[in-house]
Image 1 (spheres, one colour):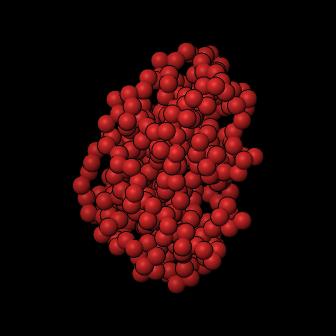
Image 2 (cartoon, rainbow, N blue to C red):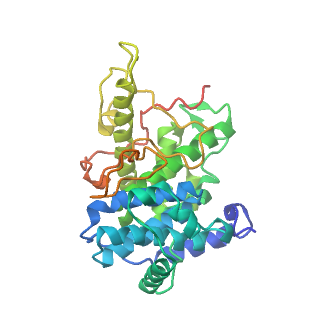
Amino acid sequence: MELEDQWWKGQLAADIYQALRYKELKLPSYKGQSPQLNLRRYFADLIAIVSNRFRLCPAARHLAVYLLDLFMDRYDVTVQQLHMVSLSCLLLASKFEEREDRVPKLETLNSLGCMSSMNLVLTKQGLLHMELLLLETFQWNLYLPTAAHFIEYYLSIAVHEGDLHDGWPMTCQEKTKLYMAKYADYFLEVSLQDHVFLCFAPSLVAAACVATSRLILHLSPTWPSRLQRLTGYTWENLVPCAEKQLIAHDSDVKEASKQKCQQPGQQQGQTAYHSSGQTATVAQYLHRPSMQYSQQAPQPGLAPNHRPASYLSHSTTGPQPPNGPQHGNTQAITTSLDPKSNIPNRAYQVSMHYTCAAPCFDR
C-alpha cells in the first residue's frame, strides 16, 4: 500500500505532505523542564538500541523518543519507571507506525540481554497499564509528525543531475544519492540525541538534515530553488538548526580522529581528518576555505540503521542503567548521560560553502 511503503513516491504524496505540515502546527508544546532531563540521552539510546534490534522504521523510533520527551516534560518519573515508560513508548510507536507482525512481542523483549542488565522484567499487565497512561496523556492521539516523517519526501529531490560537486558535474548520480541518504540519516539521528532540536519544527529539522548533507558533500548550489519550493524554507530559515548539526558533526569527526590515532599499529606521521593533524572547530573550517580534511564518509554497504560510533557503541546486551547492577559479562554501551546540548554554543556564520571535504566519489 502507498501509505505503508514509500508514500512520498505516490500520487498522494503532496496531499500527505500538506497534511503532515498542517498537523505539526498543532504539536504539543515542549518546555524541557523534566527533572530527569540529564537522563534523556540514556533512554533515547535505549529506544534506539531496541528499535534497531527489531529493525523498526525510523518513524517509529523518532515517534517513540518524542512521546518519551513529552511524557518526561509533564511528569516527575523515577529512573526505574523511565525504563518501563521508554519501552512502552516504543511499543506504542511501533503499533502506530509498523505492521502488526513487526511489533515487538513481550516474550522477545524480556529475552533481550539488556533487560537482565537493567534488572527489568516486563509484564503484560504492567505494559498495558503504562500504555493506557501514555494514551490518556496524549488524549489518544499519536498522530505526531517528527523529522523522520518528512525526510524521505525531501530526499526524493535532494540530488539532481544538474547539481555540481566541487564545481564539476557528477559522474554517478546514484552513488551520490546513496551518500546523501546516509548523511541525512546521520544528521537525523543527531537531531534525535539532543532535546534542543525540539525547539524547531520537525519539517525544518528534516530540511536542515538535507541542507547540511549537501553542504558536507560539496554539492552546489547548497540549497537549490527546487528544495526551497518543496520545503517552504529558505537557507536563512535553516541556519540556526544547521549550525547545531554541524557542531555535532564536528564533534564526531574529532572523536573519530582521536579513536583512530589511538588504534595500535597506526603508522607514525599519519594524520586523520585534518591536514595538519590538529583539530579545528566548524567555525575555523568555515572561515578558512583553503583548509580541507578527509572525513570518514558513511559507506553504501552499511546497514540502513547504521549510526555513528561516537553516539553508540553497539553491544548485544544494551546500555548499563544508571545505578544499576554491574555484570562481569555485560559490555555496556558507552554513552553520556548529559545531553549534547552541553556542546558549547559557538556562534559562527554558516556559509554556503562548508570546506569539510567528503571523499564520497571521484570525478
